[in-house]
Image (cartoon, rainbow, N blue to C red; front, side, top):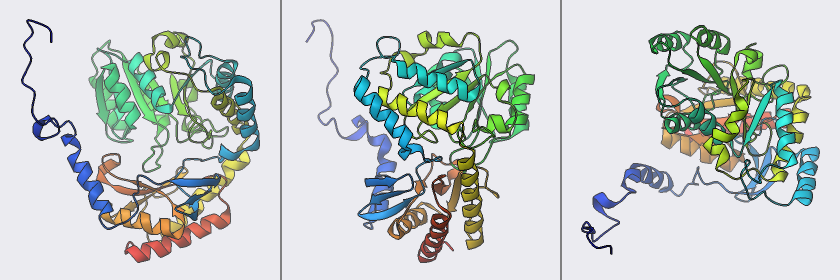
Length: 416
């Protein structure tokens, strides 16, 4: 022990009382205990023993239809994508063992960024190791102390975390409310930096932002605009560029954030932009500079998938057909849904409470159907949801089968 430095008395029990750093999680621990007390499956710890295709897997020894994977365009088993990954694995090995600014940029990383620039028609593209890191890095770097971030109250956790890391003033507004956005913008001090953050599709309810109106309001007040298109890239818009494209505002968006873990079918994140100074982000963005780059096999699969998505109009059309059929079928069965009409590939089935939601989730799993159980605080308005994410590879027959499973499970649990 160093001399001259007094040491505080050490508590006898580091695991009890006020000294327990885990005490803040006691409510969650009790909630989980309550869910598992009846012997039901853990809805947050499902193991897929074998994945058979983009739409089916073996779960608990049962052939299960997957309706909760965000594998919107079904690219995870595309032969060309798999071949590209296998070839890169043989040519470049298993990993880069370094950051993009040191030894972690291989030819595949540049090719992946070129594919993104071509896909979006943008001047710049920057690939991150995950979509979470893309939001964390871009937001925290461009909006700092003294700047203002005006964002939708239902924004994803990665967006909120990016705001916190950057230490900007954060001003939330009511979900999808154009008037509320404008009111917040009017209150920002004159001359302050302003960033408006929106999402194309919101992941919990599957609803779409009114981007045309919101981007116009943001630009009127001199704000830069960042849109997270994680849940719309690949299938919304004529070329699959997302809600920005469908709304006709893609050229007015300063930054578009996305992920490879949804429609692209692998892992990673990105930001595309036309800002003339964007390349400096490679030197000043900490979540880009201080983390290992994606393995060569991953960026090879991403680049191949992105280029194939450019020509995915038939798959997009079939995915929309699946979404319309499932949404209408669930409505006719009497389920309460998150949107009045299908707006995306996400369909949220609202449950009365967490207990009923967990029971319905387990009943569906026993039927041979996997969906996501989403609960507060991740959900808006303290809802409990069964979140369904459709895939372009779901057949018409599978959608019909899914509706039958929902009907039987819903009647068993007493939801309908």
